[in-house]
Image 1 (cartoon, rainbow over the protein chains, first blue to last red):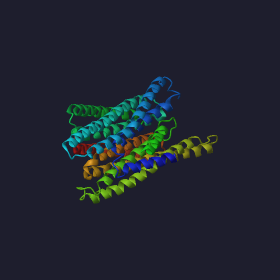
Image 2: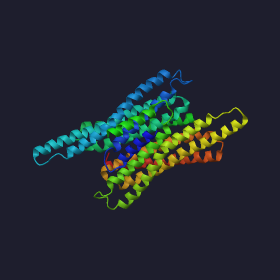
Image 3: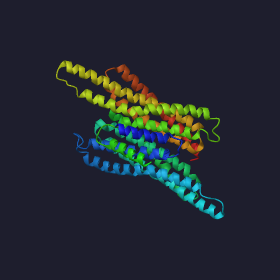
Image 4: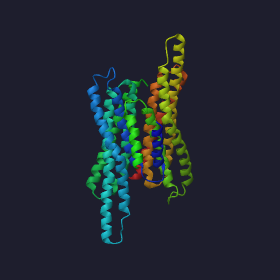
Length: 210
Length: 210
């Protein structure tokens, strides 16, 4: 654990620093990946346990999906940094001539689109983690059922965090069709995740007798 | 970032594994620490920025507290593992004689108390991070204000996650006074955090125009 502890400290130091990356977008992707990892843990512990035999095919299906989502979300940690860096680079392009200005404006718009798309993809993936955490909470081994509740809480926090980055970038987009589709989808994802994550948390809490 | 990426992958692999630690309790402490780190980042970026001069003493005060909380929460990642290991070790003590049984029961109760106290402390610290994220969201630089919203989401998820570990361990405690105090305090922390984190998220979202 000490190696992990050191690496954790290093990441948190970078997060806390005045350097804008890694920032909230990366933190969102990591929380989503942690949510997926906790769903995987529930499955990994439950598979082969007495009393979980009937649920084994379901747990294996959930595990395959949670591991795919974990990989996707882990990649997004870096995607968020590069989307942010791309946007900063676009703003720094020369604007001496009209030609410069046109090129710069185009680069900014392309970067803004990417900086909207990355958190939208992150939020979608987190919505899928939430759905999986319900199945893990319903079928997982009692001893690790609380981890499904931690998983859903992490994934919901991640989705809300990713949504903030859509709210930041979508208003400045000139492509209003894309911007409004993205904002509309984020609002739907947020609303669904709010009620779903409450229900899953209550399901898990009920199983704990707390 | 690649070193951080590797260490992150390593932590997530350990989280996802069939090994019960690190589990939900450690994930809770890390999310809380990430929330504190994001509050620190908002302060670190804002201090010295044009327009933030008047808020500088406030931002410095918030930063000092968020860094203290980050250190406390980082230590809890390991505390949770050792509390869990202590409980597992107590359950494995010999129970051949009446003397053995009494010693084992006592060790289990002491370990359960610690396994309730650690997540209760984690939840308290997360409640403080939530309060700080409001101050960061109110006074921070506009460009990083969304990170206060990510911070509050992370800290709230951490508090809810820690609460689950109190719900697991408190019912088995023979010291009912302690158990009921812990459960009562957790319920209060959860209720306060639910409304407070919603209000802070709305405050941040409003500032983004999203």
